[in-house]
Length: 236
Image (tube, rainbow, N blue to C red; front, side, top):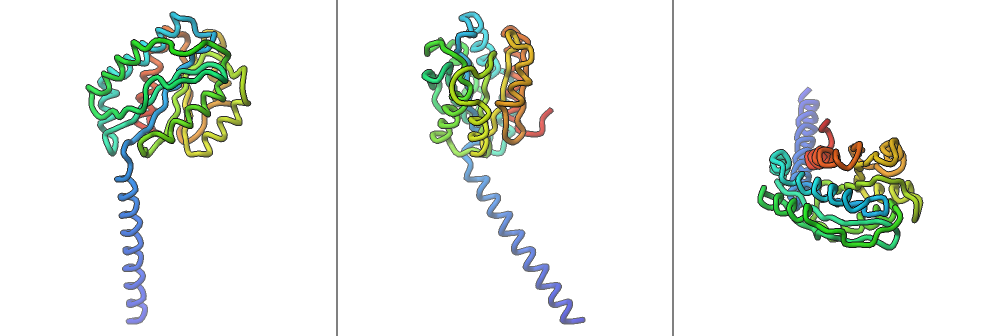
């Protein structure tokens, strides 16, 4: 009986030591993150997006960062910080970073980013819709990003991949790197575009698609999308 009690005591002590070591390691890893989320905003500038639609897209995106609930969501993360970069894309030859990686940790910084995005002009040539190249270019940006618990590509588009590599293969390669791809689809030209994106474009932990009926409703859709991305998997 004494031997069994001794063995049991040793087993419990060993378990507690292992548990403590794992917990300390997990806490240490969490503390190593500079931000809770590294987010790439990939903005469609292909031929199908006219000048008015582009302006609605940028103003809607900018206004989302002015919203109080976005500020609150950022502050409630483990580090209270996110990092954001924005890029424009169209065909295989046209991708451009328009906002370098920027850390957002308070409302003033979020509002400054929102105002910058809202006024941002179109900076690259129109072209076909190469979602696959946009995903590849977006994934490359994480090489320059702060260390983050979650890495997400937020891609918006009103069309299907019509040039460049097959989009589902590009998606698979990006997701294999631990990156989540979410999408906002504008349904003004393709009423079932959200289904196409579900099958071929989005992927990774907690991925989702939010549809907007047209560019007028884009602002509300991108706000809801950003809020969901900042809070992370689990929000409905």
